[in-house]
Length: 423
Image 1 (tube, one colour):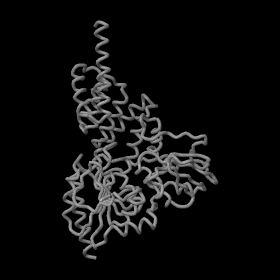
Image 2: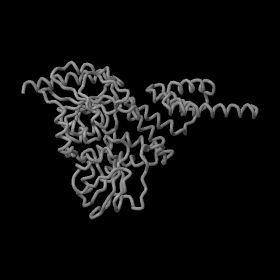
Image 3: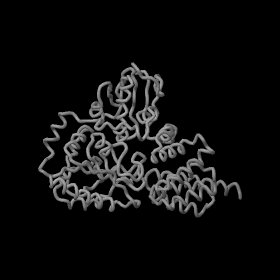
Image 4: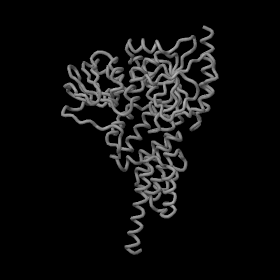
């Protein structure tokens, strides 16, 4: 092959890889897939094309095809570790956790510093209930490419789990709102160890986090921090405190809205003898669009008499209400308002989103709708939840089958209303 011809091919491949990555990152997955399909037909021996094609198929939810694409990439380039980690993600989505663990272990055997493999391996361990090893692996998140939260650096040292007597420790929130609502329960444990805690979090959470109790000073991101002796990321606390499934702090509730907020929301949400049920059915499409339930599938829920439906759907853009609900979310200013709304309810029905964690932190009876491949914190198979004693988990038995979940919810709602009428 002439140098001119070879240079043309390399330039064309570089263009395709660049353009495909751009389409993928922009969410134009169908266009990216068309590009990759054409490319692998022209250059079938280029492993990176098969890998990138697998990434796009995975985003589209075509798991079987993504597996084949990753396997083809690994056949061409067995040391393409990112393909094997992504292959593990596919197996997890299919419910084959053992094979997912095997694929991650293969990567770590030959590339012990591969952060993405450690991350996936940790999530799998947590999902299976191995919290000691899982939270240790979870610490690799800071080395993962494009992790959602930055690793903070201070002149003060990080806390590694030692004595906290008479010390002030800064704990900073990370990742999403739901993570903060779930893991803030660990802050009082630091106070019990003799520490004063400075907790830094999003402004919209500050007023609610002030209900965590004495010894905890809450400040919003961007505000000047008071002096402290050491620091830790919020989601590192279970690892630093040696948390297991059996020792999760479950003193519920551990958050509460103020009396002023409760009084306001009590005055605007009706109590007319019906059961007040809050509903949240859709979340952000990233990182997991499969967590949201299509609104049209929810229609069987409205057939039950004796229920006043209250919207807890805070992500309103592009979200169509499934039926008539009391929607006062335009009055919500922060999570304390949402907490005060939830306190007016008898039951919350929600997908896996921050509303679920808030409802659980308040000790409200909550029915959680879960996709076939759930997030690690919800475990496997059980209806009970290790993190929230007032939860009942409704799981997809078949991938993407929300209809069966809603049918079960509608049946259980009928039973609940029947019990309410008989009292």
